[in-house]
Structures are given as C-alpha cells and as structure tokens.
Length: 263
Image (cartoon, rainbow, N blue to C red; front, side, top):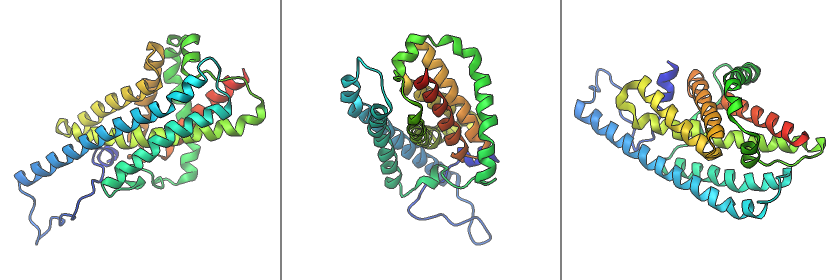
C-alpha cells in the first residue's frame, strides 16, 4: 500500500472526476489513456521546470563560489551559499506546485501516520542503516575530492547551532525537491512499467540527479547517488511521507558539518 501512495501522487485537476458507483460508470479505456497521457505531459513539464530551477540556483551562487574559491567555507559563508542555492530551489519548487494548484502536502510534507514523536525515534536506526550501507563505499572517496566538494574551515564549537540550522535547511529543500517532486514526477513518467518498475526507474534516475548535484568526482557521485537510493527507499517505506527522510538527511549533514568544522 505504501507503493501505491508514492507512485500515484495526487495530481490537481480542474474538476474532480466522480467516484465510480451505481450512478457513475467506470471511465472508458480511451478516457483513462487520455488521463494518463495528460499526467505524463504535466510530469515532463514539471521535471523540465525543476531542471531549470536547479541550474539557475547554481548559477546564481557561482559568484559566491568564485569569491571563496581559494578559501574554505566558514558557517557564515556556507549559510550565504545555502541561502542562494537552496533558497532558489525552494522558491522554484513552490512555483512549480502553485502552477498545478498544489501545495507541500502533495509532495508528502504532512504529519506522519505514526506521529512526529515515533518518527523522530526512527531517525537514529535509519541513520545507522545508511552508514552500514555507505561504509563499503567510503574508501572510494578521496580526501581531495571531499575537500573539493565541501571545503569547510575549522570553527569554534559555539558555531554548532549554525551548522545544524544549515543542515536542516539543506535536508528540507533537497528532500522536497528530489524525493518529493522529482521522484513522484518520474514515477508518473514511467507509470507504464507498473508500480514497482516505475518506482525503481524513478529512484535510479532521481538519485543520479541528486548525486550529480553534489559533485562529478567518481567517489562522491557513487556515495551521494547511493544515499539518494536509500532515501528513496525510506520514502517508499513511509508511504511517500517526507518527514523521516528530511530528518535523516539533516542529521547526516549536521554530523558531517560538525566533524569537518572541528577537525
């Protein structure tokens, strides 16, 4: 049932179709095919818009990146960079949803079925499982590649709340965009392959795009793509709800930022 929720996200329509019943006959095959075609067309349009949003957000941050090209990022510099890149991606995602008459709830930003407290408890085991998956791949990442991807400067411990806040923003926006919008729209595009096939293809492609956002170095690409696949699986297990993956993503980045800033 979780796969049904994720692979068939609610698509806004000008007028809701009547539920099948004694007075409402089932749609004809031609009408169902027309609806599926319209859904795929809208999905492709949203994916194209999402690609433009990501590229524009990265280009907008390019001047800041070149400004600090020879230096490491402190918490203030990284906060400014995230404000431009992820702020742009968030505004772009909200714009895409508004065009469809949709909102954050349509991407899975709703109260988890088990509640917030129980979901929060699951962050630690979910994070541990992710680390177990990533440990064999950790040797693929070279120190130089890691420094190139995120050159964080050493900072005092009192900056820890800032690192956590940055990680929270990054986790929220990236999960909303990749496991919320992109994964769902790709599942609609690949719907003809069945629910399971659509999810597998959508997970692979959305995770690869997620990996490319974090760098083109082979080691970094493999690790971040694997993280994307794991988070897509967690999203499936959560029935399309994004709260747990957002928390796991934020926790992972908080730990990574803290270790690198204190080392």
